[in-house]
Image (cartoon, rainbow, N blue to C red; front, side, top):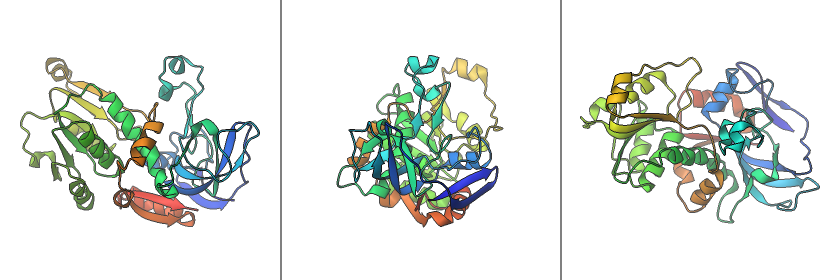
Length: 330
């Protein structure tokens, strides 16, 4: 089969690899589409994935074409979206229900072969069957949505009527915008230096959109500030925009070397909470339900649908900040 392979830091090419075969409790999925994510750029840099080469792609959906001998829940022809999370269920954090912090954390498309290929293998327990009205390739959006749902689980202490500021109006920032609207925010402002992405945030109904938080009139700051960029400069600015008693959520994936400075006295004196959200935790099925209910419009969120042969180009466009969600299709 054809697959995109990251063979060394900075090197990716589409080549022929062996077809996958399912284990007893696994299925083989014919991939309809695979989304690109900031994690893929980290893997390309040699981060996250413990060893290279690896076939990336942790946001994907497709059709079951083969099942392991012990699989009874799915059959060939079923359309599924795949939760990429692979937990050991045995370590200290798994036993405490914090599986996303698993000491042996792994994920399809990160530590094992993923969906940037014609076929991918997944545990049957990680597959969510799609309802008839969902287009298969659009369901690649469920995985990033599940990360956003996890982010709002972290923010569950946020009260109704909060004012929210989001840095970044790429796919994840826009998903956080949509969830903020659905969780009782009084207003959701968005900051981005990309005017095309800001235009999309306005289309989705943000309260205000600007190239800098200085352009927004919130002298007391915001109740909730979310970074969805991973950019060190944005993060530093965002930390200073949290109002008294507010919460800062680090949601964007920063480079390992990124650093920001905090003011400990201000955190103490103003009772500011600083927290993070790591990937998916008990949120994939809920994201699938939200997606099926129309929480996201795929035509707004998906800007590009490119063939797998152009995977390197797709990564380049993503790195340059072009478009929104970019899908590759085998």
